[in-house]
Length: 246
Ligand SMILES: Nc1ncnc2c1ncn2[C@@H]1O[C@H](COP(=O)(O)OP(=O)(O)OP(=O)(O)O)[C@@H](O)[C@H]1O
Ligand SMILES: [Mg+2]
Image (cartoon, rainbow, N blue to C red; front, top):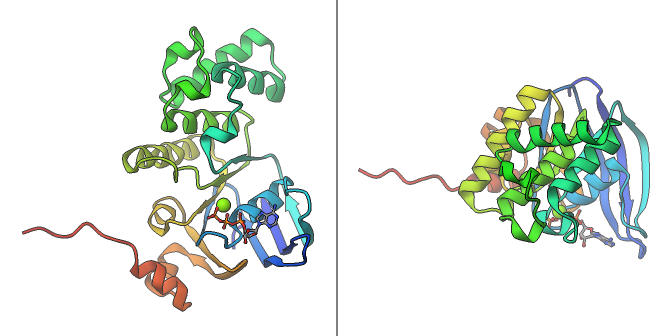
């Protein structure tokens, strides 16, 4: 495991009815590292991220032996459209976040936000002719969410399936973009997905979750080449490759 920018030890989450939803999850990541959490639907990925950032839904009970986060944490939520305020133009949302979180003047925030539009290849005319989230494509909304999260200058970025709602070519663009931004800005990242191929593209370390537990964790190369758990092996075997054509 890496150094200790973020350490979670023995996290357990229970529903109001007493179901054990997340079981004894421990993880840690160091500066600039990327951890991929892969697992099927309902395995507890989102709840784990929400527990880390302190945004658990009401009714979920948490016990955790140790939770240490050095620096700031930001999260990109699972669905781009429902994570943006539909009644609030996107550029204004971005300027607000920059102004509030970076404590700069409005004109300064406006300038910084324009820089984000450029960095994320968003239409730069948004700065003059702002638009509502519903007037952008899914991929553009996702980029706005990434900009909103990164504008808070996080040390750790938590990404919850940020590309699942996108078509595959846009998916690749967003992943490449996150990779480049990470290189430039140096934040650490936990990237949650059900897609092992996507996680493998981005992450040096992988954790596999099933039924609320981390059943396997290690360096990407080890997990992919020598999966210890039968379920991980199934995941690896189910990644489709492009067939060779003569
Ligand atoms: N607010 C809640 N109250 C009660 N149970 C919940 C709540 N939110 C999630 N759960 C349950 O906890 C389990 C884990 O949910 P979670 O959303 O973390 O799964 P996930 O791995 O993110 O799945 P997906 O890939 O579909 O997003 C599921 O069984 C889910 O039904
Ligand atoms: Mg989820």
